[in-house]
Length: 135
Length: 196
Image (tube, rainbow over all chains, first blue to last red; front, side, top):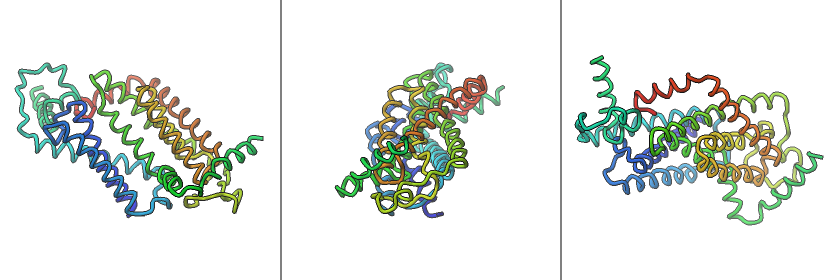
């Protein structure tokens, strides 16, 4: 049971990583993308999702009793969160030079995920904390 | 009458199994517990980040909530159903007559958990994004058909599952509307930490 749980968690985590690169490329969320060129983002998504599915469904016969519904749901949430954390951290390190002049921006535009079009996740959080510190 | 129609329909579909090896393998793949549902869940995950502008994205994010809460409600309904009605699986009801291409699940046949979850995902997303919602209906129908084909459900099990999934999502939408402005506060809170 632990084996299938770990394998399922890895499947979800890798696939969600691929999905995040796809949406980053599609919606220009440069701050969570690993790549400068969107083509590489799409390519990464295809390889990650295709590779993870191929591995999961060929490594073992999946037509046998496995996870319960609630376990599957919990593992999916955990895997997708882990994937977001890894993606946000990695892209923040890779794109740490994606520095922007705050004066250029309309603060209204910089709310939520839209901020990640022009800054990394760590930069966005740091900016939020600085703003909060200033009151 | 309904039992008889269900049986007839089941054998029409299940008799197709065991004829062409590649079709059997395909149905076994899409009818298993993970393939289609993980794929659909990934589309739901992608919807959270999708949107050409903040308003569009917020509509998608509310649809994702609807789908997830709908799946939760649907699971509760399934648990209640299972407590009251323990329908035998086709291979238990007609031993030796069913072409079984899968393992023998031990939980009740009605309703189909897979159909419940697939239709809850599809209808939840449909409420916020018609195009993606219609797109998700295709795998939902496909996995439902495959469950009958591989011999683990009767057609009425998947039909009942689909109706429960859709009803649960509508219930989730109603609850989210009643709970306003709480869902908006949560969404705004997530937006402040760049998660929405």
